[in-house]
Length: 471
Image 1 (cartoon, rainbow, N blue to C red):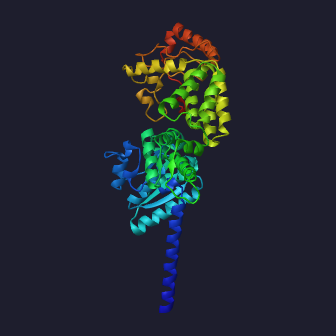
Image 2: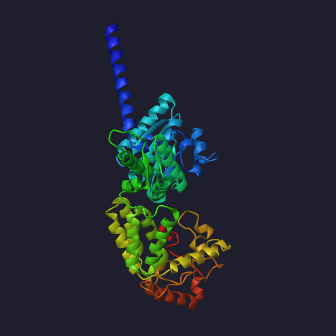
Image 3: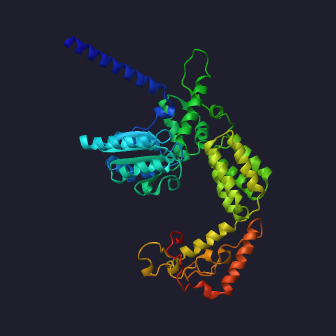
């Protein structure tokens, strides 16, 4: 019995030693970004608005008072790092899941384990759900009751806008923390720390190139630097060990691209040239600047975001399809990536360049906001108020609302704004592209409003005042 126990003890000890050795080797072979992951909040570079001395995330983590949270930000800004730091600081059990591979069954197992853990050990549970936007509605709904009653504290990480990708009930029960892309100085700090950790050095312009080409992504800096260090280490004489020294050339080779623009000026000058070329309806110039930026290693997502803005700012309703094309190119940049996504970007550049141009949507929004900021914020007129709930009619909500579908052409003269701003014209369509059609339609409608002033003041209740779609 004793001998058997001794044998079992040796076996366990040996397993522990093997496991420890395997962990050391795994850590040594891990990517640079994983080896240098911060171990404390103070080691995190960037996100001072969350992690500074008075930062809300720091206060919640250090006090172990974190409640359900959504971490939203671009890749490489520290979402997973912050979640791991939560795991180290909390007394709760920390359970990581990836929404890419997990399903409803996994969620239910986490909830059941959390229930047992709370009952048996009085210990709470934090569920870290990476890529939470990849959970569909049913999967998110399965998690909602546990989050709602506090059984599980959710920490979700997402690169997508959570207002579009996370169910409203789940989002309303979570605190949203938005992480920002790292600045050039912060990215340079990441690179310098990595060089120290690797016992290497680098030229100033190499560090500048690393920071300028990463588009706010710390992981991209470390991934590029790791390749650059390998290249620099191979430049010495055979059999001679020396500390690696990284040059801008090493960084260029690591990115497989000439870093034509790596500082603030060139970066923004070239995107400005691209936007102005497209705005000026010159597809060839647009393609030239797109090619320059792609060859320089520019982030395709950055280019795509600017094209999406341009589609509404400079094309607008002159070609409503322009925004669809630009958004599709942006989606392709996320899903496909370079080099293939360069074709999607090129198509968007050509489409936007040859589209008829109008900035009337931009001007219209500016005029409307000017009214609002100047104090024109009167109450919603009674006939436009929400009338779908019990008791709304007694308050006069919806009284006199005219349901457009009951009228010829699904249109009726009716005032939709408070008297303070009634009659103010914000959107004045141009005569270019589809906007010319819009101009004709609006001209007829506005003329009818002016010729029938009585119709703009509701007087009789509508049968649709209390219908759900009256909202």
